[in-house]
Image: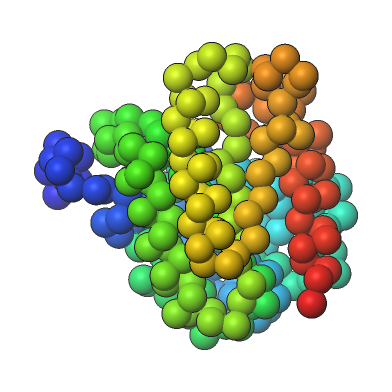
Length: 237
């Protein structure tokens, strides 16, 4: 089924819920079960929805062998009960499946932070890359579900973070297109929109290995910028 969906460029794969697509260092299915358990155990005040960039930051549920960036995590989240719903390699369609299959059910977070879409820009054997418009539609579908599951929650949309070392890389332009659509969506829905891209980049527009060693995932230096951007929004009542 995945192959057929991937091959059909007339179908927006970013809005079709699917479970695990890619192999990674962790057990995707086990993490899903952990999220279902953890959300009931802690009744989170804050929920972080995302991919590996969120997953690798820290918090619960923990992934064995993953150290994370506890200093920056604790600097912003220590006062709160937080559920980390970041899953490595997830695309918008994976998040949709997770939301349709128990995640965020039966809890009442006051804030939901969403950072998703970077993996939709990648082509693999299991899923095609999506256009900016398709990815924005995927985010829109996620927001529809979050509003139903957590109608009381304040929603914060994160801009897709910069990728690739150099500013003239084609993926940078795609990400700029995605973020323009994300900002428009956030404005229309009266959400907060947060873009920490300028803080992550060097003055010449390059992405430093000190911020993202693989030019995707953040170091503690990068996560500090995210923490600083979220802190006033989480404190606001």
